Length: 268
Image (cartoon, rainbow, N blue to C red; front, side, top):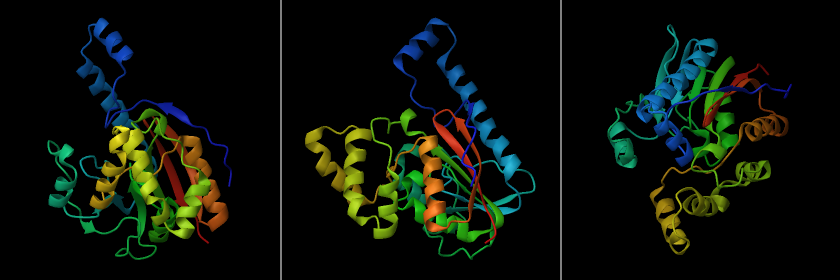
């Protein structure tokens, strides 16, 4: 696989990252309302997602974990929504989304395994801001490739760990991901919750152990893993090489705090 990729730079939107203090002061000095700036970024961000969707998505597919931000698919394409529970339970799990409409899932399933979806049955899988929530990302990639027809597409937006609340966390090493795939993620689960609690949501050190255990017991969906664009491409190259995944990287494009990766399934 040719791993020399051009990563282009495009602006963003959704969920908009916190504006640094220095940038906020600059905006305030310019007399232009911050809300106006954010809305403009939102429009540009959504435009990048739509442009890539219109270029790569056709036929019928699935979107994983759309919640309040379903991807607008091109005219003529159809999509079914997959989530781990129904809308009422999703609202209970994500109270911070109470002011937004949430997509009603068409299919309730574990998106890391998609046990109810037949092999080679869809043309595309959309998974935006999902792979970082997977305990076994390599296994999830295998699942997506299993349900895709040859030539099918995986459309995936991934948060850039340097530009989100994960910025203090280390980038996940490939050896760690391989271990979680081969041995199972149970042995590293507690470590993930403690790292998230300490470095992402900044719980005081004396409270980290208790809060991490509470979140783990609750099954709260944290970011288990953290990537940059180059680190994620390295994962894809390693996964294809080590586990014979029928995977081709078609495009990688930055979109402010996230990057979008387009992959295709080739015939084996």
